[in-house]
Image (cartoon, rainbow, N blue to C red; front, top):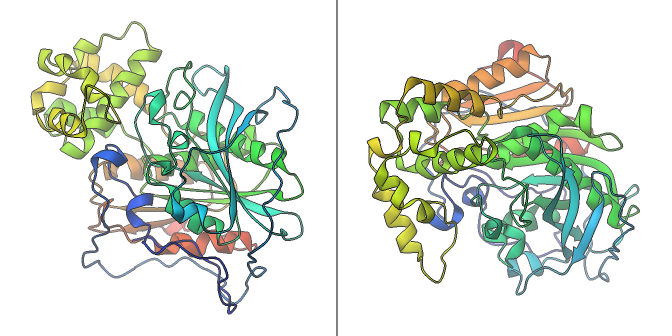
Length: 441
């Protein structure tokens, strides 16, 4: 399982680090953070058969604390991707795991580009900047691909002081000497554009533009050097950000990416729906996918993919948070009340159409040449291993420099991904330029 990002250094830490471990925050299961208990159960794991080359003997500058709050100023809106539309204080109270580690936190609204139709969009997110003097060139940026939180505007982590479970992860990245940017993703937090659930191109654009926006707030403090990092849905976003960096990330300096249990290609959901073998962890992901694709394809009839009963409870199934009329328990009961036939396509043509639309949203989506770590478990209960490995094969064939760690018998819940921490820190120090595409597990 994962551990917080931390720098290899003999110096005593001077920022308070959150006490809880981060595995469940990064590798959140398949529905929403709200619907899954936050646990970090570790089962007996098979021995590692792949090691990530690292250089632990080199360390970055020592962390500092007790410095004044860093100055973050809203720049003039460039009206181009990454332009800052609004700079706001975060919702309060901010989770103390994040607010007490010597950082400045802002909610931002910035410009980005939809991967569905290349239209301009406005996207919200959060920027976390270490206080105190930065290293030469500014703090490098980690574009944190957050896990799934739902597909409605109110499901945005930036609207909550808790960051919907992401605060601890962000704090641990920041205290390791990084600026952290977390995107809410298109259509979540900012109503208006269609939510392109599972669309890699959109997610990649959103993370890249979040880095641009963070740099614009204080170019002296925030570097143009960046790393993408995330798990599950955020693993898809992290992978896609690396892919999109060549065609879309001009003006920034990508060092590499790390994607943990990425939802790289979710076409397996359709096969499971047809065969009636969707598991409960996949229900919400599949439901969000259906709604998102229907929203962007007006000719698609949702009733070709759901039973009359599923249709009757559909508004509840789409909820990510309790409302005045719907409790957490109501949402949970609605999901668990579904049976195998409630989400089954009613024809081969319907299934084929849906699968093609999901495939169009998968990675790879570019020709990333920077180092990219992929860690996944063969027993992932959300993202079927076959499509994930097909995406990896395609990326390797395209010449990407992937380093792949295949964890036999592990699920998204118990995946050992400590190597991602070392890999990210090694990227910062100029290492990690390795690939095992020619001899991957």
